[in-house]
Image 1 (cartoon, rainbow, N blue to C red):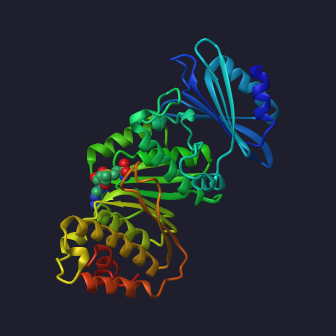
Image 2: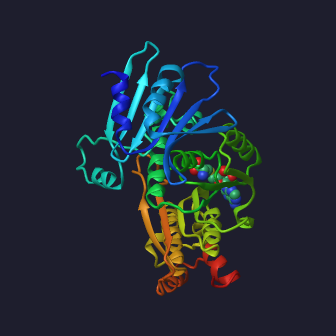
Image 3: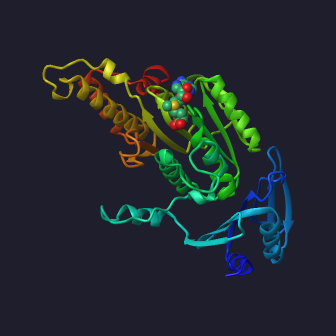
Length: 389
Ligand SMILES: C[S@@+](CC[C@H](N)C(=O)[O-])C[C@H]1O[C@@H](n2cnc3c(N)ncnc32)[C@H](O)[C@@H]1O
């Protein structure tokens, strides 16, 4: 098939987004170009956005001129085109020797992901990712997860899967927006998830977001700031600070915390609740607090052995968190977002504010606290110190 025909196949579809990447020459100033449909004064146009390391430049063209623009770009400027339409994803890739690869895949989505999960064990599942490796998003390349030519680096496969699944779950929860979405990532660390989520929401979904990553470590945050500036991610900010003391500048729509250590997760959840945040995605880890408080009980089988007590205390911590969220009017799911083999820290607390409190949830928490003689930080923040929200 000629390259013109490949382009025609794509432009005939209902295009959501096109990405041109991998410039043909090193000194080409625009490392990437994205194209997406846009209504400008009620007239449908295609907006081309070219990115240098520091800036983005816009140009609007008529849909009828798109095929020619793509042809020019693939002949003169870029070696890769990724296309996202309502029905399918497309890839055109030109090798150094000028060989052209063309791939079309049905669009993946929630239903498809669910269908995959139901595939009986042992069958050869075809994996679909919201961020396929072939797309080679710059953050995943720079984070050493994917190679520039779109291969997952073998030792980083677990990270690749984890990020994709979280992005998929977060992405599913976001409806079309009429205003910018405000997201905070607490304990962002090196910000794998933060950068990739920003990329996904802004560049793939075309959603306007204002995102902040917060962490205690100054050097890590400085590095994240430099990367955000290199990508020209103007609405992605990084701040040094303690989750417990953090004050946002305005309302917050979503709070994320991925492996924020021990009670840092409690402060993240508490902040989200007191700011009436609509959505929370929290993957706890290092749940040591309750194991430290829990005494060996002569009549309690779960506290007889140190290791089992620790594991039980960790589970209890997250069960209490889930109930405390429910008590404050959140619908909560506790789910394994990824198979244990890819990460043992795989429990996700996903919470959506409904405003309807589970009236029994607080009683359940208090009963467990009496039984195991513990007082979790989140309970203390909500009821002992700050009173009920
Ligand atoms: C295990 S790392 C996870 C980093 C990142 N979210 C990820 O999953 O790749 C935990 C991060 O939380 C940060 N952290 C822990 N307690 C914190 C606190 N109270 N306030 C802000 N950051 C905190 C640590 O500095 C660390 O970078």
